[in-house]
Image (cartoon, rainbow, N blue to C red; front, side, top):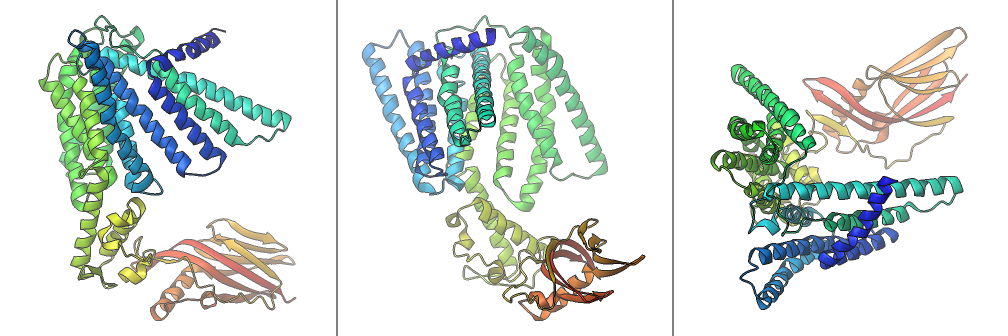
Length: 580
């Protein structure tokens, strides 16, 4: 019964959240209402869902404003009169209006589908506001900042655990009712209930015991469990992993080979984790944490610089993408954090969290955001490739098939990336792109994408399939090493890039092999002379022990490199007629 008692107490204490943070709680409830309306009406990302996202943003913004006001009023309580406090509150809420209006325009008008840059801006701003919750009330008094942050973290984890417990309980209850009583209730009702739990109720749990600014944490000590976790587990593991990384880098220097991409993953997440372990270790008992804070930043610097060298090579070859930009941003954060730990002694470490929030915000909005820098970089790459191959005349793309396969693959890769992650208005050379890649660039995006891959994904099917004279019509996909059809003594299976047909007769078995490499070669020969290849052009007719059959290929893809063909994917129709 004890867990239920704690849950009941948490429910009752959530009233304190409404009293202390009325606006954020009201906005969280409004956002939930709009999300539920969107779900119940099966709207997708339409106006109701957009309003839900908008009020979630308002919730985070006004929570930050309330915490900021609490912090500044407490720190200046001897200097502020009631009139000054009222003026400060009015000014803060007034200054929030441009941010509210800007986010409204971003959600509803920057991109009608709430995708691309609009979504990146929203996610970045929300991340900034969530991170700001951890420090904004402590900007004027930060002596006890580390224990304050730990306390907020514990509150957050506890609220998530409570919400997940209720959410899982609702799921079990809902499924049980449906299964046991055949109620057939729509699961969108369950999702609506879960939204109530994970938005306003979860926020109420989180804010109910949110540390007040008046509470001092100067005498705070981390628990025995946290102390053991940091000093006896995290720190030794970090030292060990650092040693492994240094051994690996010495191997790279000795062999003069730089693995692609792996160094970034090896170092980046490790350095970020190390940054926050150093942050916590300042409050652990004993000398282990203090020595770690002195030694590890120095050991981490060469690793981070090596990572920057690796990402520089990638960016120099392939330009900025959104992911590479974020890697640079996080690497920059790790580098500055380590330098801060080295040169700034006995600090509150608030700078680390503030720095992280600023980098998140810069990466999300403005001219140097991840979206804008990546768009500029990839547009420039595409332009340079087109100029190099005489495919850009008067600012317009001119089709040209006589370019190297490497350049074709790069152009395909860039165009696909730009089309997938950016709005047409942000792609300089493709604003009037008509979606026909081959007509625009002079070569097929599927044909050349993978080591000169000839893709016959849509063999012309304008002609009706003539089944005259055949008794059986089967549609099949080819799988190497698998049986495709087995009935009435007729068996079809795939093996070694071939379709094999067998027929059982009295005491014997007759087989026929159709080599798919020969079909691919026939396609290549036909492609040289014809832009359109019909299904009958590749059809294969044969007879096996009185069984007449015909294979019509509807899809065929393969690679051809140095006259070596490798079959990738095959779909076909199999028609057969019994003669005997």
